[in-house]
Length: 153
Image 1 (cartoon, rainbow, N blue to C red):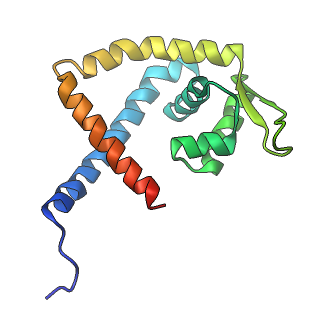
Image 2: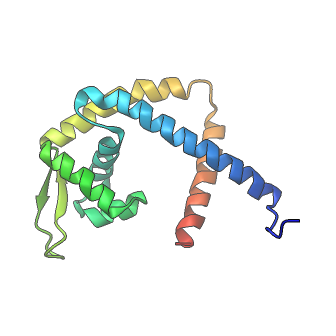
Image 3: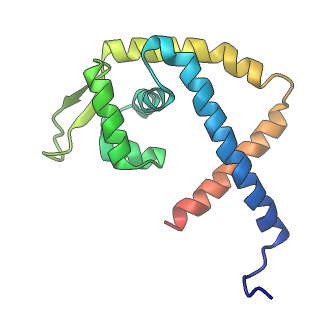
């Protein structure tokens, strides 16, 4: 007889859903790679460009990583790749000598914009037939779970 605690019905559903989310994440990354490969991007690079473009202000790598819920070292590696491609530059940070700010270049903005042009018809086709109500409910649940996980960190 097992002494392991039993999951609640909601815990059972979330356990199964977690595996589906992992699979969905992999499928999204693969689709993103295919979508932007001709732009010299990968899903990971596109994701970082998006975080930089949507931040509204220049940030150091550590902030980008925190806001994305990602590992700082992984984000740093990708930012370095983006720098080598001329998509971002580093600028001095007036608040921290060693933590340079990551700044999108004009080339980086152009490639990000081009990726988003490709993304629009793709995302429209993927969401065809899904109700806005279902998508909004899915987003609310994801945000609640994310918030609870962030609080437990």
